[in-house]
Length: 67
Image (cartoon, rainbow, N blue to C red; front, side, top):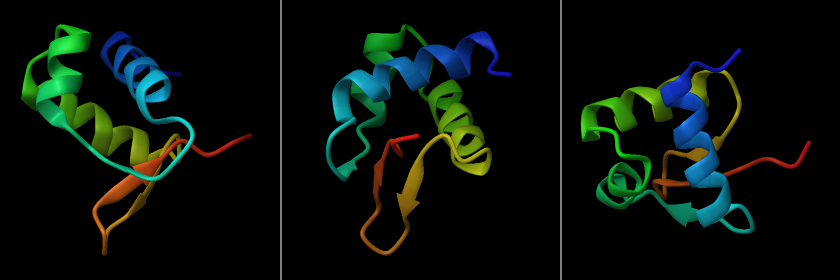
């Protein structure tokens, strides 16, 4: 189950980047979600660990998987 911060970050990421592989913009996500940059980084790491997002470490791009 997602906590409030992770849910908010996931919604912002979903609406910004859902269709293609994209580079993450921590500042923009932080501004749109009204969370600090550290909270965004922690939430993105948790979302990746729990397989809510896919991250290609070589190109530093991520996307939302279709379920």
